[in-house]
Image (cartoon, rainbow, N blue to C red; front, top):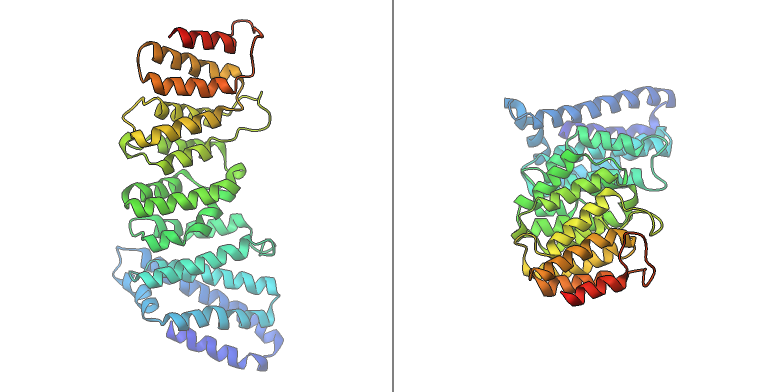
Length: 361
């Protein structure tokens, strides 16, 4: 790396003297060689079965972070900008940021890994900005590179750290917004939540909630359903208020118009919320009130026919003395938003009839 830095410094100092035609021919080839070297370092560093695994990381770890910053931002970009368009030089810089960032993430030193995620974030922002590199690198291509370099694994895998998670907002946003997050990546992020302690779990939840709100419409329904399944698989006693908040966000919308039937994942989220609100399992008492409130909010715009089974179940629970106060509150919430009053639909009860059933029980 020291040799590369000195050579780049030499190129930067002598580039005004170069003939333009020579520069076009030379710099492209030098760029290929330099990127190939960085890719080689990265690949060797990730192969734990080879003795030479230490070569790449040791070189990078011994390389002063300020010098590395200078090489990336003040040598590479000006040299390539001198003989290319601004868009092409930015794309080249983005490639270096991704390669060097991924290589730094492999290192044992936390500060170097933080520097690595910083480079990854800068590359992601440069592509995703409205004035970014869409003509030369699409977001799909960026995601392919991120996966090839195993960035998600380095940030959320076995060697994760709170400081890396804290800086992973751009990475999660990239995967969420482009409808392209894989179930394996969700598993990796989720395992970080469940196995790395409360602090990391809350940090990941905060990032997911922050990203989910603007990205909701772009996420696939299957992805939302998969997240809901992950929540449902949490041990009942380990559920916290952030789980309820995330479940609410995942199941809050189902399209335009109250008469439209909610999608399967929305009904799945509502059913899970109902199970919590009615204590179907040994859920913490402190989240029951929140679950009851959120269930009522989730089902407010539903057609009355979809609410009927829940009201009927709540009345049965009251009749059987199963959490009568809890079920009474749920019934009242559902009947508050009941659109029917005296009109009798064939085979369906009116609000008045449900109210009478409630009084009788």
